[in-house]
Length: 377
Image (cartoon, rainbow, N blue to C red; front, side, top):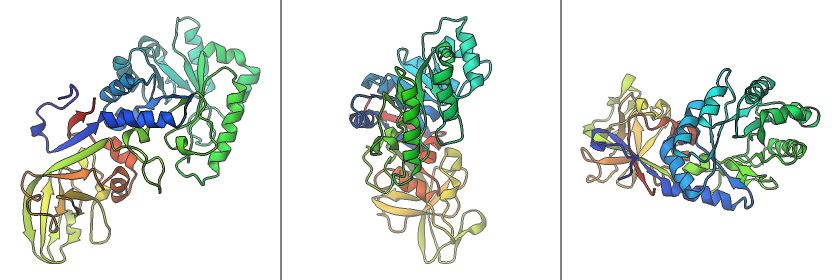
């Protein structure tokens, strides 16, 4: 039993099984694609839902030395289990938080002149060893300095860079999962100019899908996220990553309904013939999207029962989902039996499509009321 496992797991209706060995194998596999560059790890959003503490512990044990989070609170958690790592906080420097960064040895990712000035002023009176990062926005129009502003800092205001202790310059792809998008080439070109303007400062551009783009330099540090957790960084092609997460929920009750029976809230699904239905211990309060509802007008999510794909029927409700198990083996569709919601043919991309969303949202939404079982640590 892992120290991160949920105690009293039998008290929960659903279980997440998280393979930390697969997580570290994915990290190593991505590193092999960019030899000569350091491979970091993005562990924001509670390590994409699998838990910051177990994920960072496993990755640090495997040799990861640089982590990226979104919030200051996440950085504090990562620092607690990786005391020697560099921990970057991607969402920038909120006013008045410099002291917390210094206290916990965290590195802000600075994306505006105001953030640069506040951090530099704080550093002038404080002994801070950890580097900060400079974020240049080459396409997202979300966070970061414009490329021209970054070049101006590099060429005309080098003293401002030195005062802020910039130890990394970075940007973020907008469409790297789409290899045909011309925005990738524009961003690669724009960032090459930025990196060249900061000689001696390490650079970082590659996210998960960026590792698979042709003619894209790896620079000194990469930042994979989704692919670490088993998501497919090459949509439309076979997934090169190992699955990390599986989820099962238990059957609470079974019933048979006649043709014409309406099922679930507002009767949005109608049985076409005699059907056997199973209600499972999972719903949108557990993080499974309500958009996975299967109605008379649209398809939705599915579960794997005894090796058979069984569709949801009716609306995904707060705590429960109804599944049509008519075609499943009788021995597998029994009260108390587990059914698979993520695993095997129900990979993250398939589950995301069934819920009319993406695998990212599936991953980061789960874990609210499921027991957790960690393997491979």
